[in-house]
Length: 164
Picture 1 (cartoon, one colour):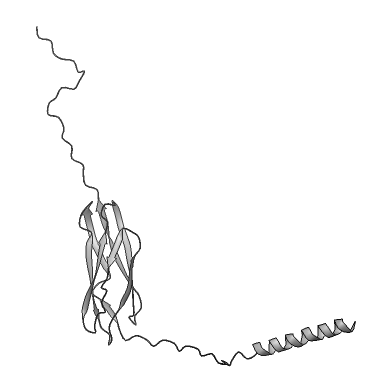
Picture 2: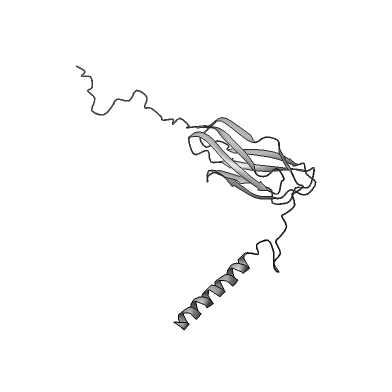
């Protein structure tokens, strides 16, 4: 019986010490919390955020450009450009854009796909305004198939005139 009481007392004592350690939430005993990152001074100003192709033919030119300016006070770094699907391929500048300078984001859409276009490109950067969402829209029309029809040919198996 003494061993049981002694064991239970030991467990209760250790539990109390453990809970006492957890109660110091407001203190950082030897660990530092990293300060929040400062807000970037770079900023991106797009000339346009939507490009309307209108109606284009299948296989037509699916390229467009989105021009922008760094209106901030430090270099603008574009970290990622991502199309909403594989048919929309963006190309962003790799080098930082200095304050007051301009850059271009090129987008190519696969015009082999017939039908309506409504796709987006997400541009991630260090701009204080955050991510930019670019949109392309329009319609791709199928090209009519041209076939050569025979000129006054007599179909095979057709009756012929008797000459008599």
